[in-house]
Length: 230
Length: 369
Image (cartoon, one colour):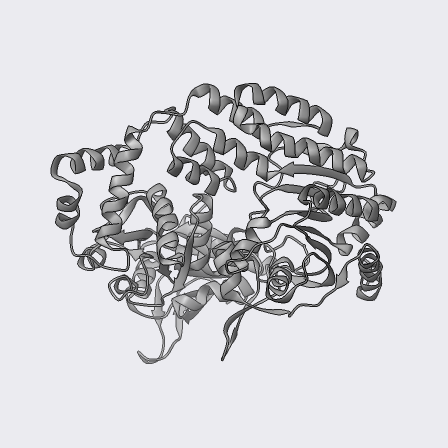
């Protein structure tokens, strides 16, 4: 038990993670009762830690776990200079979701970031404040819009039911995760043609800042050989 | 690395120089209301400043610069004209692993004076040049006002000029706009389709068919923009020769007298630029009269375009030669528009700048090593 691997503690993400490792010959199972956050893995020098998916980026950044499974969106949003702090060991091919910018369907004049920028300028001149974009992905959205040269907007924090903020008058546009677009359509929103900020999927990450002695490196090499990752 | 007490003493010496030049020393709060700064700078400032929460006053920022609070103080109860000096910490978050300090001293000097803005530009630059002369820095100057004037001379519509002015700070989008307006880049397919549809069935029918009106941006606003886009589609392209001249101006880099000559040449094609070039020439004379060696003072037309959004006239920086890794040790410029925005209906020509004593010390150490 030399390296610590953090995996999501519940739901489909946990089941699919178990399945992904099982497909590669690593059986994982929960130990104790259904409510106990403990698990073990057969035949590998790995200590399993069941954690909330949202806490895994923090644990990776702090180096308290050597490896972690979580959405790439959460890692990129929560860890500053994420690629200097963690390394992608393997994209896992499930948990797909797109972080996108969406605007009201009735904005027939807006299909691109170009349009959004022009509308933001006109909106600010008319309403006296910056066009509001509701999101919980502040860092990703801000970096994306800066790169695209969009000005005159502001981000408003929304930790849930983000698609409803426009109808409620709390925002003019949103940036949120969607997998099928169903919820967006139901809320009379549409995605901008060039509004894809990040294509997220469940990913196995390695924490660069964890303790990597000889034993840990050997355990990692063994694990990587077994799961067939680069 | 110099310790804080040493740096503070050096900053106090700089402050004394500014006071000796006629400035009144002022203090500002460390905690600034976030709303004003966010409204002024946009979301980018949230990424660069420390935001904290006050249970009563809402979001507050640890002072990211002095200019805004000093302008606010002046607009509220300042004498006219006025000269201010200040020193203190500003706070900026830095990229992970950059090693740059997130808390550092600034010493600044600001002039609010209606009488002769050109002379005020020269006064501020000459003072900085004099105060910084022991450090052997490389000075560079620019003129955002010249770029704004160049946009104004283009043969095109008012909305197009406004869009170019707005994006002067974002060179990539600025170039994309120029490509669109000169016809080098095609009209986006979706926009062409929208215009065709609006011409066919009318904008109102188009909007009505698209779904319920949600959010603050009204159907009338959507229709107004469609009308703007239809107008814009009819606008003739900016003549390629004019776009080329604009390109020449934006990439101009020369010593001041040479730059002035080149700008005079440009005026043959763009007579509308004459007043701005006259101001440029007058400033050069004022700098010369203030004892600045203008023959060896570089002008870079695009200087300040990516970093100094509130400046709208003369801009300057002092950099350490051979240290491109360090930010400028001093920067400044003219920000008349900022006083208008913060002045609630009043405005006053203003110019000023700041020095970072920490960087001066770092450069001195680097030079000695």
